[in-house]
Length: 357
Image (cartoon, rainbow, N blue to C red; front, top):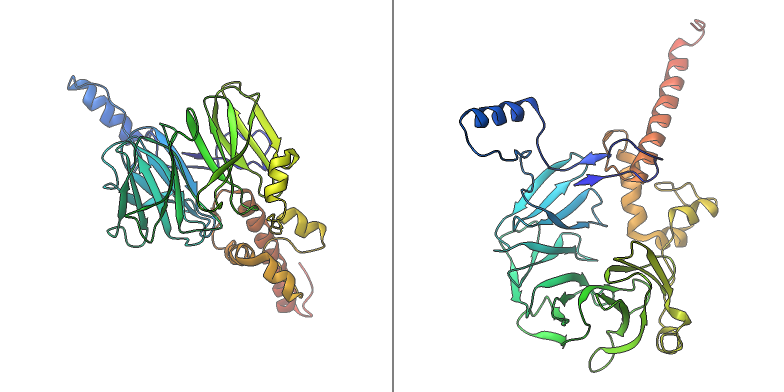
């Protein structure tokens, strides 16, 4: 697993590497020893590394140093990006390839995973033995949570089925849409439009759904994209109705769904305002992530994200290897500047009237 800093132009190497093949001298000696014994050559991995393909990743938006990975070796691993170490391996969630994983949008320690054993596991990472499970009708292609009904976990399956469950009552489905999409490959909710969801598939089509319709979700619109067979899609976090998707043609196709009359008629009154972003805060004259604001209403608008970012900025001087994400680099640099200024002031006070060197 490689983590790259996108604020660095043409970087030579990733900011952090989690797991993977071990190229240390000790590993080389072990390989030579195996070769001498005539044993079949095999890959030697770093401690706690996955030992098969990594099939899914999920970054925790509440605890931003935490990353989940799902692998073909059937395990799900929890990583601390700050230390570049695996803090826990969930080895018993699945008996076949772990294909999808996603953090809960509100409860920062809860996540759900799905595997080719056609099983979904829901648990709190702090209590790994308390696992809730339910079965799927086919292999999973995508897993997500409804951000506006956050106890609903929603699965997209290989046979085209969309399935929703309330994690508080795992015994029964909230809804099932059989054969909702041909060659279904991805499902995502719009973070700023309650109920709006999109699916993509190998039929080259993106379909839009009202998942909050009563009594059951309904299809609203669809569009054939120019990206070939589709493998993934996502909504913008800033522009409520804009989504992008990609497929076999190696291009990114963007759709302003509000230009579709059916979407505008059904969802225009539901759209929410986007949260304050770093760029918008700077343009408004703010001090950026971690800076103080006198206006209490503005502070509330920043919400939990600003609180977490402020804590990271304060701790950045102590965590020089912080997260590897773009904001971590900014926070560390700011902390170093403040420390050097404080040292310079302290030096001047100590010298007093004895002059300067």
